[in-house]
Amino acid sequence: MKKKKPNLSVSLPKVSIHPNLPSLCFSMVVVGKSGCGKSNCICNLVLKYRKYFKDNLYIFQKSPCETIKKNLIDNPKMNGIRFKSIIDKEGNNIISEIIKSQKEYIKRDEVPPFVLILFDDYYDNEILKIFCIN
Image (cartoon, rainbow, N blue to C red; front, side):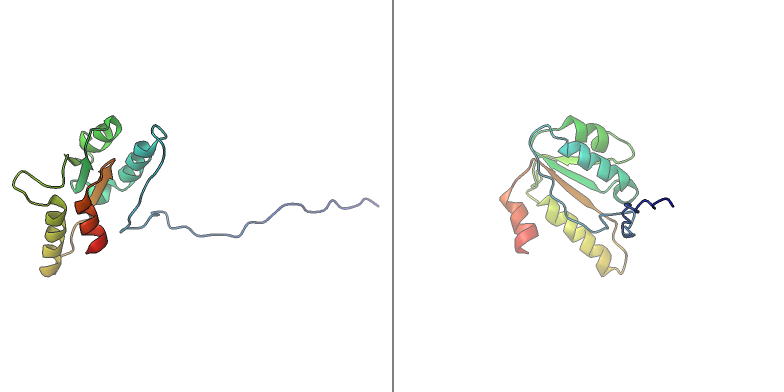
């Protein structure tokens, strides 16, 4: 009589993952050393969500990044808008204006469009005031 070989296979539990992770709304920080692919990762993720953010993508960068420029700003599927500062020429805080615009939709009982605000190698104390203190 032959000995049966033991079953060494491992059965993994079935996990259901929503296909659109991360789900909307989300905040995300991507950190890594220079040249590791942070901008590429962000571009790929944003392009997956393009149906939500097209024409509502605001990019804040002190200096231009070719990857983001090519994929998110110059790409007609996205039409991202690049800003060098969060304060416009008239002295208005652009981020506060975006938030104010979203609140106006809600006041009118309308569903506001999805908006994506991307900070690429950008830091400003005003950002902390808007997102952390308020």
